[in-house]
Length: 303
Image: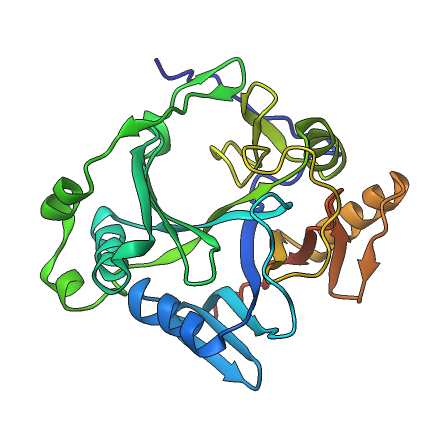
């Protein structure tokens, strides 16, 4: 049953309700190959390609930044870092087009599919082993909350049936249907306690779900999760050394004042906050870099 009275904290130490995820940066060995995967299979648009950096997204919205870093080594699967980047599509048809695109061009990268009650999700690994989730959300009115926790589980989702029911002619022709954004980012960490201290008590997300001492899900504004951390492959992992894979996670706050307030709060807790005047960056306990920036100001309508 849906808890219609569910509310979220709006204290000064919480992130704003309209906080959103920004672009994810990946350090990659094969820039051309990785660009082709996210462009031709997932269906993202190349927004810019300058030198050793490619930015992809939908329309003008950058979702993924690929940084050519051929001197870096591949990370061990037991190290901290990226578990998956989750691309949220605005319709089942758009999700089906992306899933079909990857399945046709890279069938060996499929890792599974699930109905999580709040969403339908399909999982892949990109050509360099970075986890990829492609998903669609059910309407928030269909989510169920109990005592501040959202009900999520893992139910079987038949990928072939999903495609049969939702793939359009446009999706068959090419991925790229509909709108997409970074819905959430899931990290591999060494332990859940320090993750909770950093992401909830310091950064200001709300806890939305937990799986014992193995996984934590957090969000702002009542979303099911903007970020998650687990120890399924990485329990006991220490700070990351420079490797291929996750370079940076962007979080978008509603304005410059919110960025400044967060910067002050992180410094209050003794966390090194690197401020370039527009963005603030800091590292979590495993040296995953989080960059916080203000949402672009919307132009006022002209009469």
